[in-house]
Amino acid sequence: MLIFEKGREGRSLSILPECDVPVTMPEEGSQRKRSLHLPQMSENDISRHYTETAKMAYGVNDGFYPLGSCTMKYNPKINEDTSSLPGFTQIHPLQPEHTVQGCLEVLKTAEQYLCEITGMDRMTFQPAAGAHGEFVGLLLMKAYHESRDDKKRTKIIVPDSAHGTNPASASMVGFSVVCIPSSEDGGVDLEALRKAVGEDTAGLMLTNPNTLGLFDKNILEITKIIHDAGGLAYYDGANLNAVMGMVRPGDMGFDVVHLNLHKTFSTPHGGGGPGSGPVGCKSFLAEFLPGDLTEKEGRYLLKNPPHSMGRVKSFYGNFLTVVRATTYLLMLGKEGVPEASQHAVLNANYMMAKLKDIYDMAYPGLCMHEFVMSLAMLKKETGVSAMDIAKGFLDHGIHPPTMYFPLIVPEALMAEPTETESKETLDHAISVFRSLYETAKSDPETLHQAPIRTPVTRLDEVRAARNPILKYDFSDKETDKDDTGN
Ligand SMILES: *Cc1c(COP(=O)(O)O)cnc(C)c1O
Image (cartoon, rainbow, N blue to C red; front, side, top):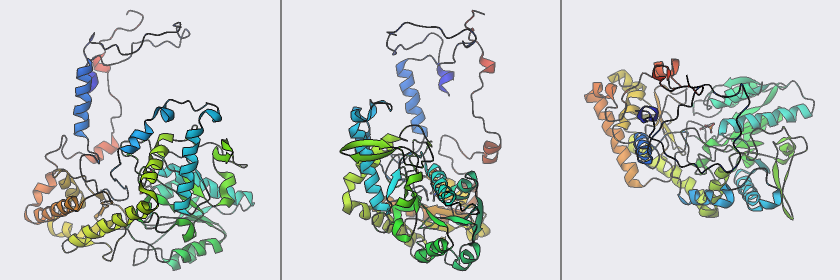
């Protein structure tokens, strides 16, 4: 039941302080005709409503969340403590710089650490998500080519294993996308890449390890092919959880990087944010970054880069997310950062090794932080699809792995356990994986019905996508009088 349906006329709750400034009515014509549909409830009922709603949702605090490519790791609670400090929350973005020196220090510290981790020279925190970071990174590449009067560079090369946001961002920036196939071993096909580059190449977008969970051993050759053709190399940093503190995109030959603070750097995500997709670049691109950058000249100040592309988000981006990421980095320290990645890779390989006798692995060698299974054979034998198995996890209190991605693996399931899970949790998930496989063989119908223990069961996903109901319809409940007394 929605909160609007629970409310009862007159059951109000006055928690707003009395207005201490003169009340002014809006101009004639801009006044609303009807009163707002605000639910009227007691505090007790509101509190129960939200507790009930929260219980129907599933988050990383409820249990295991092996959603591949999303890095759903546990977010230490101390990040919430620091990001709730009044010095960070009770400020106004238009305050003079000398009154927010602490906040600017956080931005500068985060920039320094994350540049050190990525091998970049400067970083902006304006972008609000990974895809937004891609957009900014591609604008940087465009600005660079244009500044050299190199206007024929209109193409971005993207491998077929890429995250869907990569080609989407490239076309949003006005580039055309050249998709190249992956090689047998799941990496970039060097021959296909050599054929694809030319005078029209603006650059390449790549994530390494890629979405198959594989580190591309040819990475130096790949970025060299791009540079020799006059293009730039963009690193999609969403998979940095596998390699942070171990190898740096800057050393792999990349010129621009985005990170997902809400994945790798431990900010809660899912449910729409707030996220943060900072973009780092080598110094020759820094002049085009969005404003403002934090500088230290005695004290901290904000400066626009000389040929800045302008703002891509209001003020300083999602600042509290940067506070969380900085806290996380300070807690882990120089030793903890690579250790986290090592454990993420170890956990993924442990699960993979314990499952590969029954599940077909798309690439059976060692993986990085995630691994991809193909359920094509299982589906052929039993009729049970990747979707059915994924839904089956819900009845065991585990969030399903990613399904049907990457696109080049048929009936794909992709699992990313992350470093924050114990051996017991992994062993339990492995036993669930195995028992779902047994059920697929012995009683496939059960899995077509799954989930049966969740607040809502199998949804009509096509209808949800084609006819989404995105707002509440009050029309048959118009009992409110309008403000004119009618
Ligand atoms: C999550 C992800 C993105 C996009 O990041 P958002 O913050 O969701 O916009 C891009 N690339 C890869 C590989 C990802 O996993």
